[in-house]
Image (cartoon, rainbow, N blue to C red):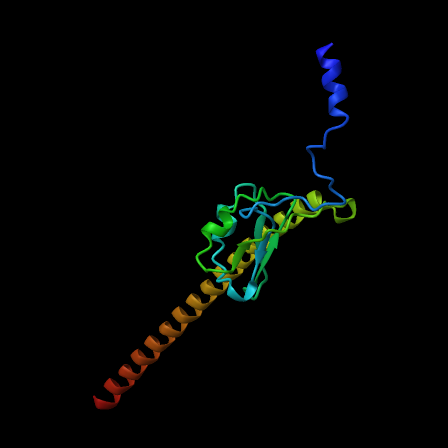
Length: 164
């Protein structure tokens, strides 16, 4: 009987929940929202990528060495570890903006997995190309040094024959 009167009494009380579409949701001052990125301040150290627990940040790299920052709001857990790991003040920051809902058209999960794999692959290709160019340069330097040494020896031999 006590439960019945309690239920009837609740009909006339103010609701405890927020009237969401009509009233904005309360956000505390230390609300952790989306991660912001300022490309002009970034030093491309990739510490944020290493610090991100779920792997929501990844950098891709083209063959000229230019890196590109990629962020997935659906994978991010908004812990702020990437912001704390960033050595450059303001390059990475946490906003008070909540993440919008992911839409089916965005293909946010499968698309991210593909982008993540492509980004890692692009960095491996860049490193392999850089290593190949360094090996070519070393071989060219070695050949130039050998040619110079041979020319010096030839000049030394010519000087001995002309003097004797």
